[in-house]
Length: 237
Image (cartoon, rainbow, N blue to C red; front, side, top):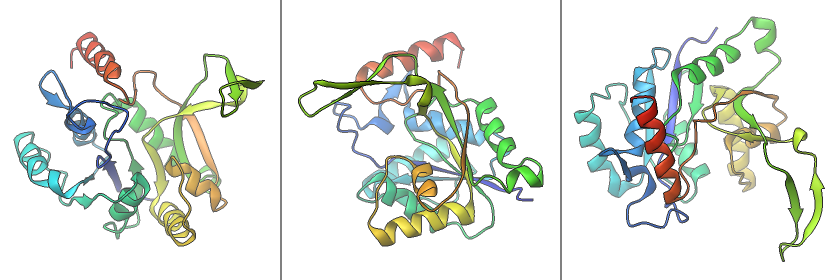
């Protein structure tokens, strides 16, 4: 049974929808960059042996200082970001040679909980018979709002059944050989997707969804920063 777990944390995106001068991973809440909150969560999680952040080349120097100042000693190597998130994660996967479990987590989801990380890993580390049935585990939340399908002019085409859809979060967890194969095949075919599990699904992998965490929000717009700050104050982090 695999015991080693490695966390890949991509943080090389431009964040075009964020709309401020600071790039999202380095936008600060209570004086701390979002990325550092995310990295600290994995640093504190006993099940995680190594953390690999993925950064733009021009950000590496400043992040090295942040790593040292925050005692992030599980970071021994840094991957260079690519054109798209998928390219960035692929670069990080190439640095991993061990047979292990790989968690891939957005650097701008600063509120991921230890409980969620552990539930994901336990689902993947379950009894041998159960583990043989799945190739990945992801967290997801039921949709609360009514969902409408619209056309290019934002006119409603249909109202879809929301109970058939889930909002998927990160971290997403996979055996190393499964996610590496999925990424290699996607790279070969020039195929891009919006999350890692979609690549595994494309190669015939079976991905299980467990209940996610409503506080595990992804910072996309400046308004999301206010929500992160509010939640951090409420849980006294």
